[in-house]
Amino acid sequence: MDNEILPIERIENKIFLIRGEKVMLDRDLAKLYGVKAIRLREQVKRNKARFPEEFMFQLTHQEAEILVSQNAIPSRKHLGGSLPYAFTEHGVAMLSSILRSERAIKISILIVKTFVKLRRILATHKELVSSCNPQKNPHPKLAFCGIRDYLL
Image 1 (cartoon, rainbow, N blue to C red):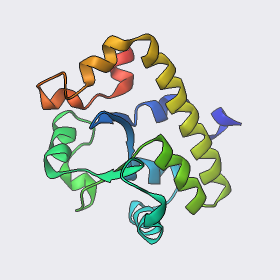
Image 2 (cartoon, rainbow, N blue to C red; image 1 turned 90 degrees about the horizontal axis):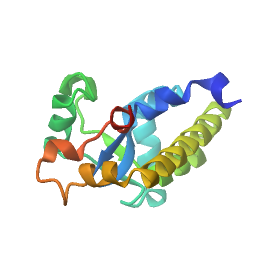
Image 3 (cartoon, rainbow, N blue to C red; image 1 turned 180 degrees about the vertical axis):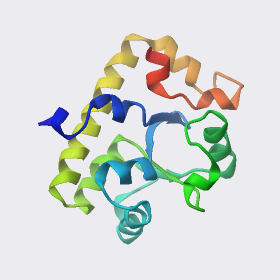
Image 4 (cartoon, rainbow, N blue to C red; image 1 turned 180 degrees about the horizontal axis):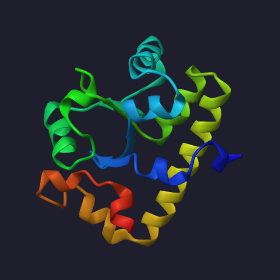
C-alpha cells in the first residue's frame, strides 16, 4: 500500500531540521495530500486548537531566507507570498484528522512512518543530530539540514 502511493524517498527529501525539530513545510505537505497550500492553511486555521506550537510553527523571514540559500526551496516567490508553516511529526498526524480524504489518511501514515524511520537512523548516528543542533552549532545555516543529504 505505502509504496504504491509514492516512494518514501520523496518524503525523506522534504523533511528538514528547523529549530531542532524534524519538520515538513506546508507547501510540501499540500502537494503530497493533493490540495492547494492555501486550502491546507485555511483548514489548520479553522482547527487552530489542534495545532499547538510543538505541532506546528510559522517560519521567520530569516528562516525562510536560509531555506532559499540552502536550496531547500527555489525562491521566496515559491512560498506564494507568505511565510510557510512547519509541521512536526505530531502535526502531520493531526493533519489527517482535518483532511479526511482517503489519500490524506494514507499519506499521513506514510509520512509518520518516514519520521519514525529517520528517528531510528538518527538514534544510531548521534553525530548527525549534534551537527544540526543550532545550540551546538553557531552557524545558523547549518540548523537546516535536508536529513536525506546527511544520510547519503
